[in-house]
Image (tube, helix red, strand yellow):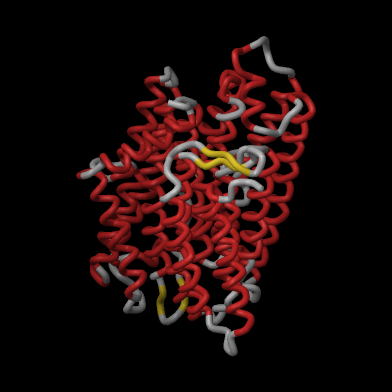
Length: 479
């Protein structure tokens, strides 16, 4: 009988998903609020269970599932993102009359898959978690069934996601064929000590695995689905896609590359450096001409993945610490920005044009202030948290000798500042055409306020997050 305690949060969340489905089926009316409330409570309880696991490394299920400080840190971020995404969704889905009980159930099942991905210690458990997450996300992308755009987004995501899964599976089969195991710890021992160059088949397998994971984090050149899916999916689903799955996939990316293949860093680093550079450059330039704010956020997210990949390319504890700090800050910047986008309603209908934000500082000064904080932070302008997120990543790269990568990252950040600052210019200097519907709701107002406070407060009190990230990163390297 395996030790079930390390997997207790996942077991609880699986039971919660079943309970939400049963509650939705047996209720007389199709009321989403009850199931959404249950989902948020489930996320909160799961986060408490995760925090109680401690940072000591423990494996179970025959070594296929691992819990350590890194897993606890990333799972907490995913649960926070998922909980906030559920809260942000309720009002939108009710107004669009698509408030069915399946939505929170799908979100809980997707989050369960993400948590399994973060704790994967074997290529098979990695794939199991990845597919559980992906199947739920395919449905959520096309959740607004009557919308042609949403159906198209779901279909594109499904087809390209299936292709990426196939590439990842092919890479895993090559690694198994040439290394003789799918277990991360066995693979790490096999490649440890640098006993000659690894077999070419292993290198090809790693490249295919990297390609599959790069799709999941929407890194160039596997980003092609991102703008269309972000624009076409319902806005709360886009908000969810932009944070929780990205954080989980990046956690899996980090665990795979520095765990079983940590001693092969010289072989895979050049691939990570390339997709990092390509993501930063495309994210900086492709967003300049965008007029739809959801498409702009899609290209912005591609750029942010590029910055995160710099820390992975470094491949040591300092680099991974930078990644963890970066994505903790990214979570609140993105959720806050999407809370503003979800509040962009005129005469009861959603608007998504950047020009629709014109004069927001005059019609809704607090919302404009919050959006300005998020945009300045995303641009990496000091002293806001986004600047420090990039600072930790760039410094790790410079210390590791990847100076060119850091310099191109800074230049890409300067270019991307153009479209972030353009949004602030539109809000503060353009004349208002039509004001947004009021009020935005207490839940949305609270999310906006909390996100803005976190972004500003990190500058004043950075030590709790930095200390936790440092401890989490060190567990991956046995320090």
